[in-house]
Each structure stands twice: as structure tokens, then as C-alpha cells.
Image (cartoon, rainbow, N blue to C red; front, side, top):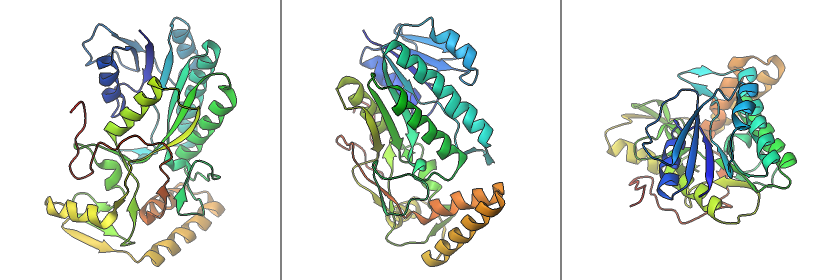
Length: 312
């Protein structure tokens, strides 16, 4: 029986992944700051540790014997309206990850890292594939990209996967998608490009892709995680309206939004003001002008408008 260490077990993806791993008869060690668990299973053990405390983390890891680390924990760009600082992203998204990578290298175990398509940032093309040069904007994207590079430089002799996740959704949670079509949820939406496409991925597909990698000899590297089919923004808006949400839709001319983005970008570079950075990231996402290339795909089980996931 393989032993899998999973960080972020209390999170949106981690909680679902652990359920699936236990069903597949893996022994799972869940890492969390708080000693709480909803997994009543003999093959599950909880490890209480603060990932940002590198000394504590190193000590806890040294007592374990594991076959694979799946690192899902991390600090988002913002939470509850608060944008996290560079020092916070650096400490949690990079330094904590570095400790886990060093341990994986030491014991030569498999390593899966949950990154983000936010690392692409301000690229100059309409389709993002894993071979192009990335230009992350936010401290979140930069910290993720730094960790990616450290993994590639360190895990020379271990099998690893860097998963660049598109916005993740499930039937109960479409928050990441709503950020790209709502000015104020759930009443006021916007559209700037009537042909804009949304590159997204269902939580079920994220879990399936990780398990597929775990069970098969997939080549080490960076992979975009995205559903097989992109979704038109206007179709998603129609779906929201048909479900009684989004009572108003504001049309923002694409050229106007693009000009605003360019101005904010220039001002941010000159002033380094955090508000300008926030506006730059927000307006870039509002443009919805980058399609994520699907270079690692298994059969897409989920429809955005009729989500089915789990073992069904």
C-alpha cells in the first residue's frame, strides 16, 4: 500500500482528493494547521503542522515514510477582499514548498505541485501553452512560478508534475468563474468581448488527472489542467440569467477595457502602488483574452452547466 502525503486536506480540492485516494486503498497522511478531520478511515492519519514554520515542518517530515507528496496548500491572491502581501506569498507559497521539495528530493519520492495559470500573467499571445515564456503579474503568480522553477531544478531524479490549474468549479462552487463575469455577484454581470472563451476545469477532473498521474508513468513536467472544451462567456451568462441570477449585464467595450489595462500597467510599474497592482490583475482577468492550451487531458466527465462528479 502506497503512502501519500497531501497538504491542503481541508481545502476545496484536497478534501475531495483524499476521499478518492482512500477509496482506491492508498494510505493518506493529511497535513493541516488544525487537528481536525472528517475522514473516518483506518487508512487516514492527520498531521498537525504549520507549513510556514520550516523547522517544524522539517522535523515532522523526518519521522515519515512516504511514497508521494501532493502539495495543494497555498495562499491565494486574495481572500475575503484582502490582497496578501509579497512577504506572505513568499513565505507560504515558496519557502514552505521549498521545504517539501527538498524532502521529496532527499527520499526520492514522487511530487505533485498545484500551481496556477496565473503564472502566465501578461503574455503576448492568445493561447497559453507550457512552452512559452511566462510573465506573472501578481505576487501570487510570481511565488507560484518561483516554486515551479525550484521543482524543475531540484527534482532531477524524482518524478514530478507541476499542475497549472485553470479556474476550478463544481456544481456547488463557481466562485473562480464568477470573478470573470460578475461585477457584483449575484446581480450585476459584465461582458467585454462577446466571443470571449473561459478556460476552466471541474474539481472532479482535477482529482482524476492527479490520480491518473499517480497511477501511470507520466513524464515529469508542467501540465495545464483545463477541461476539454472552453466555454463562451456569453453562454455562461445566459445560464446564470436562466437560473434567476445576474439581473443586469453591463457591456464594457473591449478596446476601452484594454486601454484601461495598459494605462494601469504603466502607472503600476512607475509607482509600485498596491492599488494599481490590484487593478492590473483585475482588468487582465476581465479581458478574458487568453485560452489555456489543453496539453494534458483525460476524458472530460463534467459539463459546466450540468456537473456530475464523484464515482457516478
